[in-house]
Image (cartoon, rainbow, N blue to C red; front, side):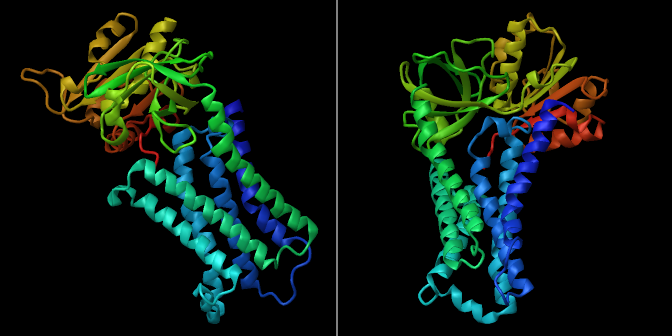
Length: 442
């Protein structure tokens, strides 16, 4: 068993244990007399749900050791899906009470209800607001930074109110060791908040970067080159990404994730290539030399370095999705790595192809086969047209389907990636041999 698989199983086991620990605590030891099964069931579901909510803070705290076995995409996807499960479990707690004892509906009246019920109802409302704003953020046109701030505020408030609700009810805190458990749980949660909001920002403040250059690229993109300010910088694997904060403090929720675009062998500088899409990205071109930037990373499992035994690589990119691929190709060129690369690059026009001018230079240093796919090709174009289809993939993918021999990396707009993943499965590419990096983490 590889180290990565062992780590993955370990952290899944830890998550399951911590999720069900409150339920085991509830069932152990003496129970309050006269409690019906459905009432105990509702409390148990609520306990497990609030444990999941607490662990959501761990999932988004960017602990590299936890994310390493899976990659950030999978962790954030799990975070989104499990939030619905945790909300359902917590909501089941009062719903069961209302079903079996309808008079408990009176607890929804925040004016007349006891304080324990008030805290519980408000916590549930906060959780519902978090999920609603997250699902419909784009439809509601909530700006990303503002959403992140309120997401954190509501999540913190919901967790605090839920813990107060548990403490005020007290039915299942009838032994010293149960009280110790929830006390330790509360201390752990507060410590986690301190790490996220205080300790880590202080660390970032002491390891800042300065903008060395801002370069205009094709496709309405800009590359910023950063140099460490009085420290040795950081090392990363080609294809990974980092969260960067520009013109602001790391104590504020104004950071954005971008893939490294430079070579991992370049130790004295970091490069990020960012397409102008609105909001924060439209300000990149106005940055100037000497401005301070904070970098939190690296993160992600989207890298050739995680597949050292692979004999060949296929990069499938759409638009600015070429960024992590460029990092991997530049790194391979600097390492003298001659393993074959097939790059299938989709754009609306040839002028939209970021890094177009560099491909010819890289082809002299790499064993590179480049296929452009253009939605609006120029007159006389003899290359691939339209979108990346199963036929295009069939024509250009290596015929070898041996597991772990050819690794496929996909990055670009969501619909393109969905279509490519489906086509790869139909073509018999093992699912473990293709890897996706998605921009949208919300």
